[in-house]
Length: 337
Ligand code: 6CS
Image (cartoon, rainbow, N blue to C red; front, side, top):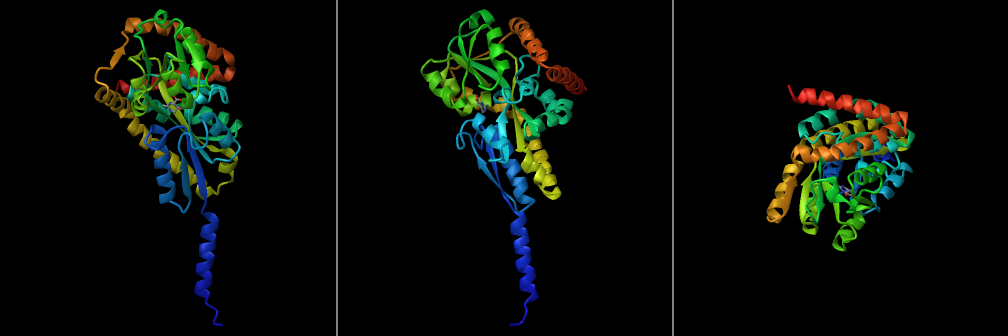
């Protein structure tokens, strides 16, 4: 039989390529059209455009709740995860930094600058995530937190005794709503719709893009902005998986994360506007309230002890909060140029 050298080379190339090509799982706490999905799809497109690797995306609910997916990622069952920071504080206490009331601005330009240049995100958090078997890829905003209730409120006194759902992984969210006079109810997303329908809870908070996407306005009478926080999410990889990647694939993952971060930050500038416009179009009689600065000051006063409690929990928390305030001051200065 004539030795067919070309066939051998082709077969070897296919073998090497197939050996080097992989399929990676990417789970998230939202759907493909939601902000975490915008990031995940951009990440997938970059990976598949620049390599033979494939990304399988698992949207919210397909692999359990956000807390389940975090454990699956930490133990390497899933390679990549998109997660809301409101679910992370119990696993990585420092991450409650992103749920603190009246620390992050609501101005989208300042947030954009902060999420691009923050020393907290780019220098201080990666080694903390490594301790939890995770490689931090990105942190990004999904919009200003808006509060939906069945009755108008303008002060902490108005929230007295109101059962307010908060995301289940954040002690700071419990502290915040207790400080605001309410009775916080930690609850996963999967249980919230039913709880609103049966009046198990009186209200909840989410960005308007999410409120509009899942018709939470139809399960309440009024939406109130108190200017207290932004909804944020992270993208992470399992650390052992990431460390075992070839140099080429590590570079590919970092470039894909950088690209997806640019895509979601660009989209994030308009998420609030798109969300509130969709709510107004679908629900024209729905009441939308923005508290005055005077009314906000009552909530800001209550928020101070929540910020102090976070900082007092550990030296790490205190350093992170101080650095975040410096990062935000930089963002504010840049925005005033
Ligand atoms: O309220 C929640 O739990 C959900 N909200 C958003 C914006 N993303 C996912 C999260 O599970």
